[in-house]
Length: 300
Length: 300
Image (cartoon, rainbow over all chains, first blue to last red; front, side, top):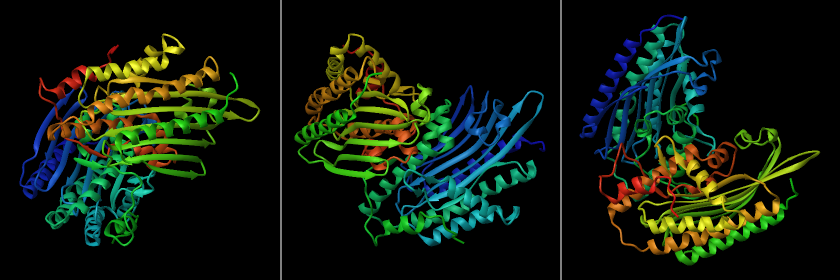
């Protein structure tokens, strides 16, 4: 394992947060609230926009937290690290546009460090970006996946396919037998071949988020829609809640480990509906979402 | 351990479901949908009312399911049962009225049986009823707890206090440091002193639900309210979602074990809001809910 530079990662992450928030403010026209917090476990800056012109709710959060003992959920793949002290820093975002034709977006870049007296620290990176449409557009799916692929291209031809598959596997609601959305990329446990390369991959993923998502947001955010589309969006947002509260490892770990609840739950949609055993009619755009878009698929 | 009669329990439970649904239909004026289902793991009848006159969403579910191996979550207290085949039958209900002055109600009565070739089967009962107001009324809390106490009075003076405490401990959102509601009663692992007594306790709890809740529903369901109260109700419903998806053992076990998702998630509210770091103003009825009602308290 090579040495690492956590100050450089922190500097990158806070700059990334600023960049993303500034660009989203341009698109939306309304400023984010910037909420800095400090607790015994760490510090963070939660940037949140609610009732924006374009974003009904969106959060872009930086946090840098530490703990005395690695949680079991984080050491399932690395039992040799159980019980170590840990440090985690990352930027995580979820954007819920108001327009049902504009997809919800999620991205996350993070670094973990596990330390123990008398032994070398162990670091690894993780990251993801994925998109959850309510109405499917093939050109949007292609654009998003192309940007995902571009972000990884400098680091080897196989990374995109590996990380795309990982994303399809991770963002899956087993209790619904449904994908969360059209996927993207997801990776974890990345420390090879060295710190510089792994950090460069994380940076490239983070740097590509805006170009992956904002053009899609801009072409959908002003499309006319009616009650039917709004209703379907609110219903489908229920799946987002189910995924994050029942399945998402980061959310569950955060809520069970005395994390900062309001920052963790910035991912929740602003308004959500549930109804019993509902299914869209055959031949509608709603059923096309399930049949064509919520399926693992090679979009490129 | 005494012998048990699962046919008698099943007959009681399906009759209880019919009784509760019939009474709620009287109050609401709109009929429930009765949805019978059958799967390899078992059978059930899900009764659901959506967009009723009084109930915005309400579900009363009977199910009788079996499994090959006791789940770890069910044997944490009884490791000697790990790996046994199991059978579970119960009635579970959650009612979400539209009027914000009317509380959400939950009740559940269930029996578990763990079997193994060549050994005697082991049974136990569980049950609960609890109430989650959006606006607090002392007379409602007293009425509900008095009915809870009455349901247990024939079986010993200490049961109500034990089961009330258990309820306060169980319906607690650690990540919010909040009680879910004003509590009620909760019990599990009940097989003493014998089948007949444990079954009688379950029956008494089930039989008291309507008299505990319906008078409260009837006196609140037509109270005038405005956007402010509706908004607070939708916000507080988010806590109900968080509890059921993050904490509730039955919900999590069901979703992770290939249970019938639509029946399990009948507990979800029909419409829910999340917003960032929101707190009610001092001196308002909303802050009174937190300070006076969402606190473990002797109501009687």
